[in-house]
Length: 204
Image 1: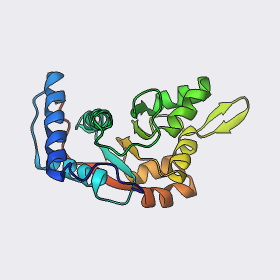
Image 2 (image 1 turned 180 degrees about the horizontal axis):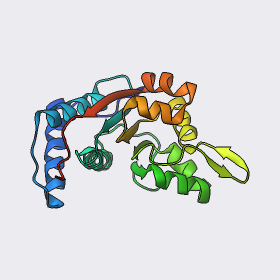
Image 3 (image 1 turned 60 degrees about the vertical axis):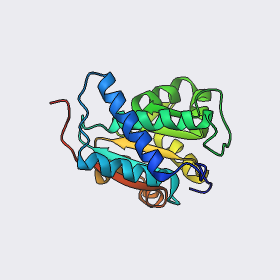
């Protein structure tokens, strides 16, 4: 990932257990019943490897609605911010708000058009999770200029090797088609590991 993120005395197994426990607790807090399926075990394992083992600095998570993607990314954000507070991370630049932030793709568009300074801060955030990718319009009109906020954000984070997690209900092929940018596929391949959540919706 370009730089070591977690101290070597924090083991892979400890991180796996921390994510699993926090995931279970968050599901139950919202009135759900946590079932640790084989798919969930594999998903947590891949996330742990992304955090401490691979040389990539991004993650693309996709799967159908209701199967735990957003819940697990909330857990990741909480753990990253907790690790920063407890000095388990070798810290880089830290902004005024939390080290890791989550933004919904539709909210990203609103921030871009109404609060450009906030968008710049979000773009430079040390860690960023973008949820519900592709539920926002691909292009918007800003004072007569066609803009693609996500590609601006994505290109910046790619160039600066900033850890980024992208979450979508669509397949990777559908996401690529949505943005229709020749740079997208090549940069995603270099930047991101991919995880597909294969369980059916837990809300049924």
